[in-house]
Length: 153
Ligand SMILES: [Zn+2]
Ligand SMILES: [Zn+2]
Image (tube, rainbow, N blue to C red; front, side, top):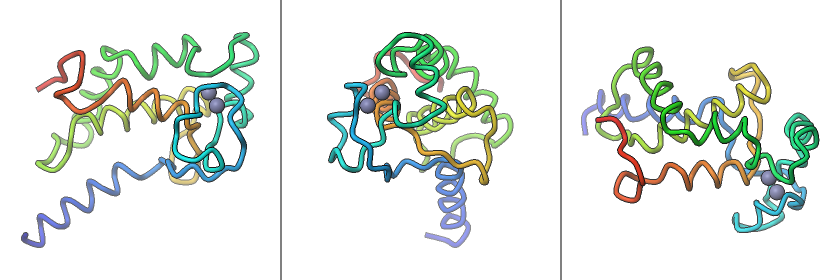
């Protein structure tokens, strides 16, 4: 593997991990009923334990943010994600050989979630994403062979 290749892989990795904090370090137990299958409960960060998210859960009279219409249309709708994908590649260039489209879709969905909840994105505004949200997005955007729709070529 040449040095440019290594650099490319590294930038891709940085690009995808930037702004996202997926290690679920908060200690709250799940009370929305959707985080339970995620690894160990003590590593789980429930949507109801994140203040800004919980506000939306309460005002919509639902149990979990993943039932919220705002979440469903913003983060699970593959047409919405497709548009964001084109925006992303216009700004960042096409996917490299070691990049997977489903991973990018998930990344875009996480970003859309953060944008919807906290309005601002950026290194200084890192937020922990609730486990139920991460799980739903993973479920919705699996690798190409398991996916119910076709990712853009
Ligand atoms: Zn939960
Ligand atoms: Zn939840």
